Image 1: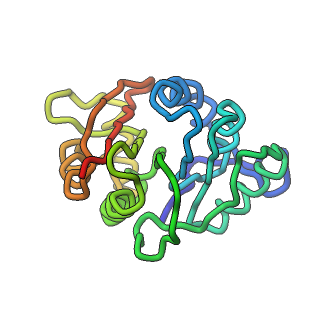
Image 2: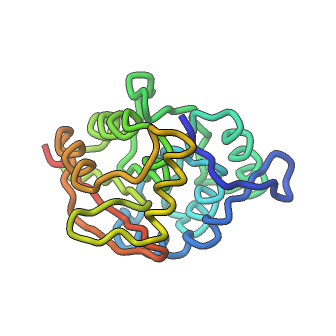
Length: 213
């Protein structure tokens, strides 16, 4: 499964840097601060370069943050960023694949965060994410947070998102912006109810789902 996109080498050996992370970290943090448990246990699916995991763990020191990624290239980068940061609340990296939730180990988390994954992976990864989140998150109240661009039936597609969608599909026909209603419907199959839609910069959204049995 693809988890890295538009990355470049960073200063630390093996670390990769994503230009989008520099742009979206603070807006994402602003939403997380408002909705995460004060001392929450958080799993990040498809952590990519690892920059978000380090930034969020550093800014939210009372939480614990567990990064994960199925890509060895990504895991090398995550380890490099984590070693440099040396944060006590940044937990050991896991090799989870969202598309294969049956291989996830037992997890004790209250929140799952997934940033910029579902449009650069096949739909099976979204299905797997929802299956895994439905199994892992506590009932009631477990929180799943998605971030990225979406198609919405009641909102005109921004030209930049339309061009991005075309670019993604030219690289892999299984990729592309997902329909928000389709994602919501998939989540509902696993007891996850959309409770908040937050408009973000650059025509992105954050979708917050709560576990309801």
